[in-house]
Image 1 (cartoon, helix red, strand yellow):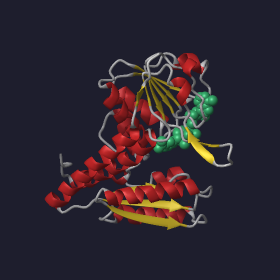
Image 2 (cartoon, helix red, strand yellow):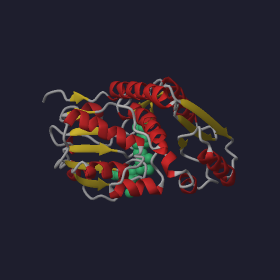
Image 3 (tube, protein in one colour):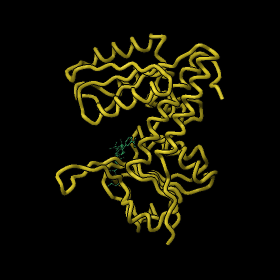
Image 4 (spheres, helix red, strand yellow):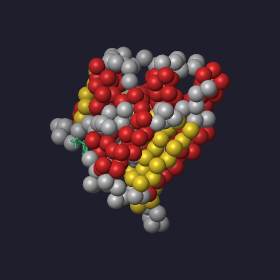
Length: 294
Ligand code: NDP
């Protein structure tokens, strides 16, 4: 069949970051406000180190302030909660992000829910999950927000489409399903107990894979012409002993049937940071009761 549209997350993310930078400049000029994002990293997980470094760099590139807090992997829950409370009170901080995963001695939910909901730029706080589920404005998790932006850009109106989300985590699958429901899709959430997952997926006009299993989705799971969004980030060994990143979707195989598809890398990943910057700008404006510049 025809080659599918390649959904260029990397390019779209660069455009979105430039938009945020433009609006941040207007905000500085108009209201003398420079949004600030505090990122907290506990321990030295190599993947987390890379994410935190990129987030800091791109925050500064967008004309906003970045505050990095690095704590040892022996940090206690009380110590981390004390830092979160300090950042909640800090007027220079508009967004707080605690990089996950946290070491085993720390209860992630307790930490996430200690962040002031209006500074919760990851959108993981139970108040923001509730706002999303009930249709109130709030902070929306960055990865599913990025996926939705790509889908709307490439498909336009999503109303009435069948959407299948594989994965039901609080950070990707569930908020993704909520966002698609808000766009009036007919949403199915699939997970490890789903019966006949390939048949469920074949109903999808929009298929989002957020599982963490390399190349799980193959062509026979995909309805011809469907839009396929691959959230998975999996590191697999190469023949030369190094590793490479692959998604949850077998890109080459699925490209034979899909109408549009995101690559890994260069698809959803770059959108996540761009949406984080966008959320930080929004948080800075909402907290002060001022409009986000156009
Ligand atoms: P979780 O491990 O929290 O959730 C995985 C989900 O997949 C679970 O709901 C699980 O079901 C489901 N699942 C596992 N095995 C199967 C199976 N065989 N069939 C169907 N469903 C299955 O992962 P996350 O949601 O945090 O992340 C998912 C992927 O997305 C990972 O690869 C992660 O690295 C990536 N990711 C990428 C981001 C980006 O910026 N691009 C950001 C965040 C994550 P059950 O609930 O039944 O166990």
